[in-house]
Image (tube, rainbow, N blue to C red; front, side):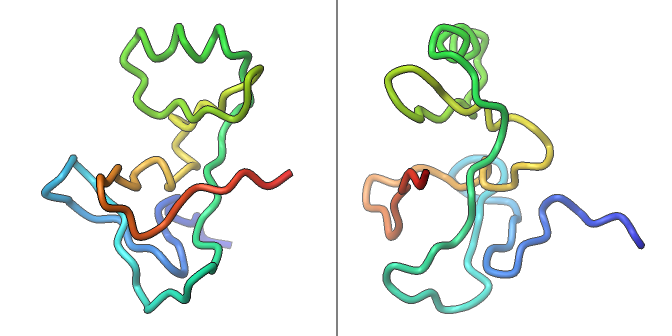
Length: 95
């Protein structure tokens, strides 16, 4: 079985962005409420997440009051989704 590029995704393509380095762009039209991509990485205690942010790790995602997700891992293409002041999607925490 050939190795899969971690940036391969059926709904989102990752390519250079005018906003910040690499960005995510829809391959197809997305319907309202559709789940697009999962933000993945190790679950870490909030204190470690804060320390990582101080080390300029921009891929820390707040999970709850106790934990963050360190999304800086190569197998997390969602880390390349850019922030927007006028977003067209939102994060949802699913347990």
